[in-house]
Length: 163
Image 1 (spheres, rainbow, N blue to C red):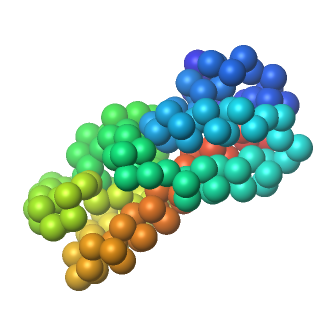
Image 2: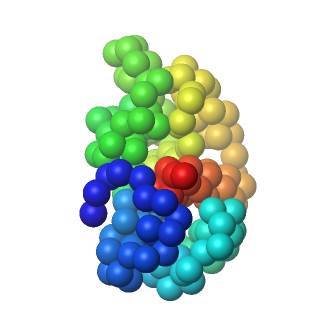
């Protein structure tokens, strides 16, 4: 699958397996990709994003783990072009070191990676958000993490079907 954006019509016309492959680059939870690919054709990008939001909200714990597996830790070397773009504001050895320390504390407390929509944010801002979220209880943090996942999915999906 090409990393170039498709038109919405082009996305609607993809074979199912190709559409799912493209969607897995947005979110690595296979059922999320199947649901979105299976609901085509979409009349508008907004209708596509609405289905994506519903699919994100319906992910169970195992599927959330699959989705999280597709994301590098904030401050680590990005694993995809999308992650590299999203984390482009993370710079400097001191910030990366503090993020690595924060990531370890976060994972020890919550049992999964710190996930945040990093697009347009500096490393310092992402570090401040991480530190603030360490004060959350597990239930609150699970809700915050799921909301951040949905934001990332929307951002990547909108980029996939850019006009």
